Length: 254
Image (cartoon, rainbow, N blue to C red):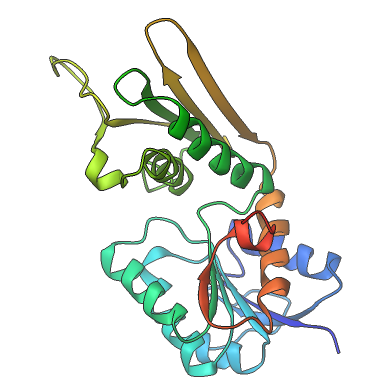
């Protein structure tokens, strides 16, 4: 019997690609949950009903729904793959609590290349002293994106901070510079968010020193890479013990 995958937010931009990638992976699409009733697959009234008919669920819906979907996964004892960005502190806490009960793959970005980039970011940050190398992260996305900086940009910032033996909160951030801001703070991690057109996703991590500059760049040209990665994570999560996993686990990088 093939794995049954349910999709939360099935009529969204990512949801439609997930439908195709579930089929391409040889899995069974159990159906989806969406406010839009014009879908040609099984539509469930809520997350609980969908999960009762699935072996794993993928959530690319909305940050405000992450906590309730994580709770539904716990009630169903079902693995959950969460790709929604922009969660607030309460949402992040709900995800961690759910992961103590079920396998939960939570990633800012499901593209394999981005996850390699995160690993490289931490290694470079560990080798380049923060008092000599300023870290700046520049990201650009389509004009409809509602959160900034992007989840991937924040993940890069956290990777840099971890490489430096600290956290993003402790290191401090600088963003939205405008007017007379004063000198840049040593050790802080800078963010710049650009929005326009239909850019899928672009991220640059810059380490800038007085005598050299290193730039790590990732460009996404097709959202399908995220859907492919999410389905891969869903199939991987089935049968895993409870825990909070990332794409590095799925890719066996850690």
